[in-house]
Length: 156
Image: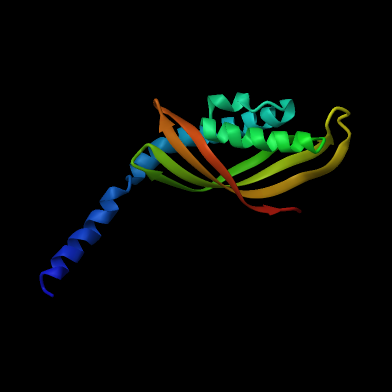
């Protein structure tokens, strides 16, 4: 039993060393927040135009395909989505080995569901609050959105 205690203590001391330091998180945070902001702009453009390709600047192919499928689903139902980000606040940011991150945000969006073609407003939400979890990866020195998961939606 005495030999186990030093091993357990050594492991307990080593685990925090696997996580990036606060300095690394502070260094990565501005670039990650800029990526999130750019993603929101490109997402709005993708929904407005019906083309997910503007996301190529800030998202992985996997995320572009996911958004493209949502756009196709809306269009098949005769609808299009118009969105505008009003507010985005980072609640938490976890960095993994300086090349992957998970970010939880609270976002307020203006949304309008419109009839495809005519643009008639079918429904709208002027202040939809969402809790969102983003997974990001760093590729070629740039942060990119790997996935965006809507965790919770609140209507005022």
